[in-house]
Image 1 (cartoon, rainbow, N blue to C red):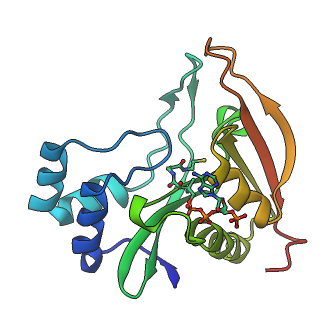
Image 2: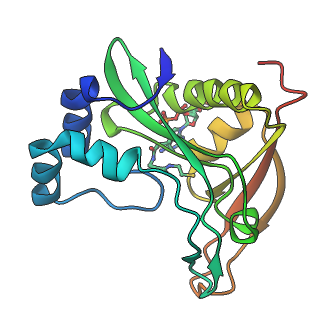
Amino acid sequence: MELVKPGVKYKDSFVEALKDGFYLGSQSPMSDDAIADIEKDFEAFLMNKVLKPYDPTPRLRDDGKYYPNAPQIPYWLIDEGKFIGAFNLRTELNDFLMYIGGNVGYGVTPKYRRKGYATKGLSLLIIKARELGMNKLLIAAKEENIGSWKAIEKNGGVLENIITLPWQNNGQKYKRYWIDIDNSNL
Ligand SMILES: CC(C)(COP(=O)(O)OP(=O)(O)OC[C@H]1O[C@@H](n2cnc3c(N)ncnc32)[C@H](O)[C@@H]1OP(=O)(O)O)[C@@H](O)C(=O)NCCC(=O)NCCS
């Protein structure tokens, strides 16, 4: 199992994952039309959406303010040549991401869930982050997203606090964790 740079050779299993309902973070599963477009020109999708060059232009965030865009490295978790999930590493945090969002966005394709892949993928991501000179990672998960915060805790995540977001009025709680890379035994 490895975390790799996304590439054309994973097209078949990636598209299968999308059809199966794979999505990352807060995005919803894609429509059939959107998946068909990706399948038609997978290289363009990779270059324009997944591997797009870093653009620092400030971005409007959910709190209604603009923040500098954060640089992000996309990795795919591959097992036996097949796409399992996506793990995005933000190497810098702006004030918004420091509050919610954090350094990591990840998702495992539905048919591979509850097999330990998120836990393993996160541990491989911690190793990548260490190689890049990072010494800690902030990761946030919805309180009811048990699979997510368990994977974080199994990788040494220490709960900092549980917050609600002032711009959301649904009482949704988020658990904010720090992983201390320097003292991680990975
Ligand atoms: C959250 C997610 C990444 C977990 O992936 P996963 O590969 O199933 O996680 P793991 O198999 O490593 O499971 C970690 C732990 O959580 C448990 N778990 C996983 N999903 C669970 C669920 N839906 N309900 C209860 N426990 C769950 C596992 O049993 C395991 O605990 P255990 O070792 O004590 O048995 C996956 O469900 C997903 O991609 N969801 C949609 C996107 C998302 O929410 N991303 C995270 C954003 S913060």
